[in-house]
Image 1 (cartoon, chains in turn cyan, orange):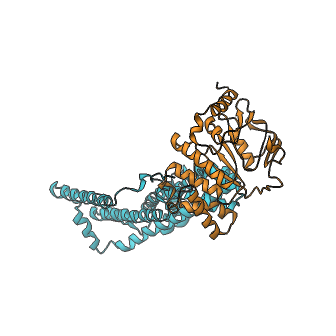
Image 2 (cartoon, rainbow over the protein chains, first blue to last red):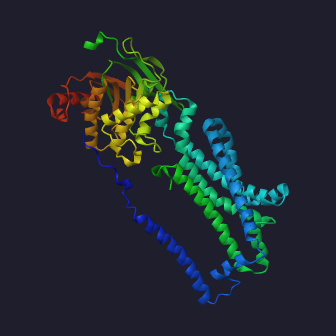
Image 3 (cartoon, rainbow over the protein chains, first blue to last red):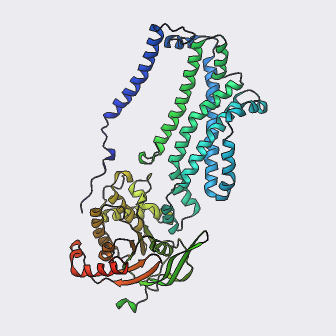
Length: 265
Length: 258
């Protein structure tokens, strides 16, 4: 018997990868260079736009407490996000087990999701006072829903014939769940987690804007008063870096756990 | 008929199944009656909506029926519904996150069969379907035809007595399909399984089947049960013979296509 040749899915030369990384890095460097040239030769006043050098120089400033504020913001984002992943995935699993629960609870959640979560910020402050907790709750509430929706969709999208196959073997509910449904839903869970990661960052920062005594968002409001634009730029960069670390962790986990073909781009 | 004296492996009498969709009743199967002897390869042929997939699901124990009889197993060939069914569908439905060997092992895991033996058997089956050396590949690294062969190996891993196939080669290109037909006959001969094979390809049904059950749609009913007496072993040039054409012509007539 002749063997058909394997599909050319895996034949991309490995030499191409470093080149792709390189061009990605170059575009970042180019943006910073353009920023530098624009500010330096465009005679832009520094309170409008500081140069990259002035921005980074603020790291040496004593009054900013960069490390402390970054840690506060990061812990708001991470704790709210982790909670959103846990609650979102567990709820979706519950829905996959009980159609009745999904029919009752899902429409309610869709309605609740229409509430602009940011508008709840002042309420959360009334309930939970200033601090890490209310901001983590905002991050949670804004990132939870896409994680739930994507995961629930993952459970629904399992091929019905695949379920027929295991049911014809009279598999237990638990076997069907662990061997078929959960692994089928994994790519969808990650797709939801990626959307949620971006939203969690935004949620925490808005929370800090609304009311807080620490964190990078809080710091931005403080330095805004004195037109310390360089520090505001630095705060934005640090917030972005927190987001990149979170997103990178999610993608790393996805690469580790999910076969390439099954990933949702 | 020579097998009439022996108790049939599958016994279907006046089987009837209807669906409700809103206020309407759909008759999926009305009065299907046929027997399958152990070791036969029966092809169910007919247009979409003639109830052949429904019939397959009833045999698999996945669906109920309204009236009639559907019995599998005989004194000489007892049947255990939990472990004597292997299924193959139009899509290979391999688990993307499992390597080929692990995919083939899925039914063994579900049934709790001893793993060391099953792994051995999975390797043998993969060799039989021509996939030696692909045990550690992921499904996406295989072509459609190769994926379907792995699915056939999966259907055989727990050594079931009955293989149910629902248009297993319907998604393959014509040439691969012909090749898979030949290989299926080989596998059938080697394994001695009873196979029920659903298709809407008339030539495929005549070529593979020891018997062809013809079903028509609107209204869904069983039109005929034809014993195919063509020489064996069968090769593809059989399709050019007069007697093959005769059988095909008869089925085209039954389906109102000629």
